[in-house]
Amino acid sequence: MRITMQMFYDRFISDMQKNMEAIFRSHEQLSTGKRINRPSDDPTAMSRVVGYKTQISAIDQSKRAINTAKDSVESMESAMRNLNGIITRARELAIRGATGSVDAGARRMIASEVDALLQSAIGIANTRVGERYIFSGFQSNVAPIDASGAFATDNNPVSIDIYAGITVQINMPANRVFNDATPLMTTAPPYDTAAGTFVLQALNTLSLALKGNDVGIIQQSLTNLDSVSGRALEAIGEIGATLNKINTIEKYHNDRNHNLNTYLSKDMDADIARVVSEMAQRQTALEGLRTVATEFLRTSLFDFIR
Image (cartoon, rainbow, N blue to C red; front, side):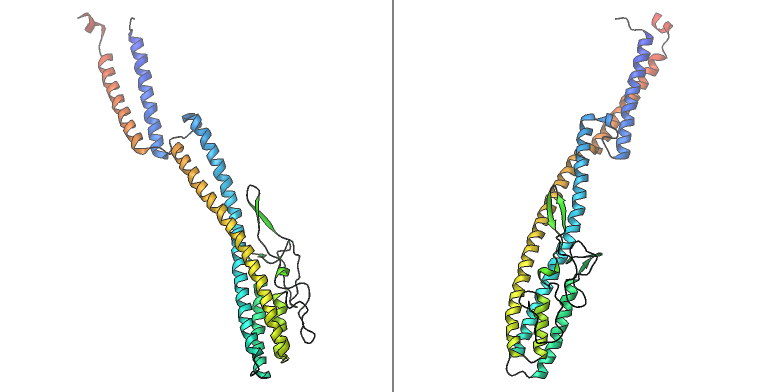
């Protein structure tokens, strides 16, 4: 094949352009730290990258829901444990008040502490996370227990989707454990009719019995408190199961997110050491090409005739 000067010149320009483009790509990868800066860099890998990012975005959205659910459920668990602590203390006071050696004045003093426990229990029932009452229903902006100690909102369960059809309940209506719609008695007898069912009625009955020096009802209050403690512990168990479900999904998401980011990094991130090495090789090749071309293009027809 006859090699003309034009062919040599065209090949020189083509090779120089290829090396310069390779150096430009290497420089771009060093600047961005990314192997893929546009879809044309690696269409196959780019399609995988899009899939990874879509899944990561879905996980991030799910994790926001998980955080919302976790805040509410952990607050419920803490509140119910505090409530059970109040019941335990009330039982201790009931035992002391039921003792025959305690007089009416001492029982009234014990009743003052029971009243403080009752107000603490009402405060727990009206616990809020942000602007939402966790022991309310759909009307989460309404305190579940009003000034009379009665349940004052709806008892609808509130659930949130934390992952692909998996939902968890993030509330527990106060009429499950604290009280129903019956206002607390202010005088006795008669006493609260559901003292063995609801915490607030059990505490209120104990207080009234202590103030009235009614030893029989004080003793009955021990049974009431045992009953409501069982209901509180049952609720704590259910909340704990919900929290375990949330933690399991959260761990799955964390593991999945870590794996997806690892895959994404393998496709997207540049191998800096390799890029630097390739860039140096390209620069060496470009300098050699320029040197050879310069020497050759300086040659004239008379050099060949000689």
